[in-house]
Image 1: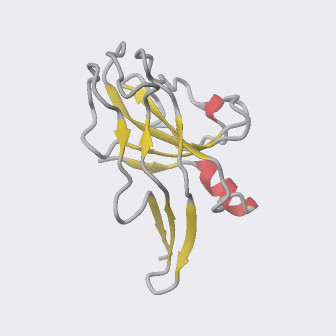
Image 2: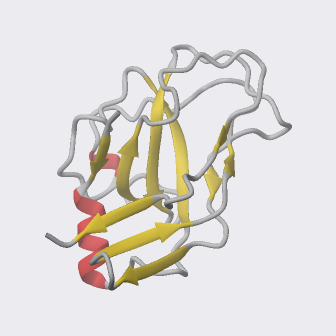
Length: 150
C-alpha cells in the first residue's frame, strides 16, 4: 500500500488552507500515472503524467462533510469526510488501463495549474479494472488521512 503525502498538502497546511471548509476531491488515476512517485508537486500541472481515468461514466468527486481536527491525545491531525462515488450513473466502464489509485487534491478552480495535490493512495484493492460496476471510495473508519506529530 502506498500513501504519499505531497508538497502541495504541506504548503496548504502552512498557509492555513487545510480546513473543514476545503473543497477536497479525489480523482481515479490509471497505471501510467506519476502521482505515485512524484512527491514535490505544488499543483496538479506539475506531475509528468496524471493519467486520469478515461472510462465512460467516470467523474471526479468532492468529499462532503470534510472535517479537520487535532487529536491532542494522539498528537495527530485527522482529516475525514464522506465516501465518494466516481460515476455519473452508478457505473464505470472499462478504462484504457487499470486503475492504480486515487489522487486526492484541493480543488481551487478546476485547472491543473491551480488545483493542489494533497496525497496519492492505492489502498483498497488497487490496481482495479473497471468493467461496468460501481466505482466508490469508502473512507476508512479512522478517517481519510492522519498526520502524526513525532
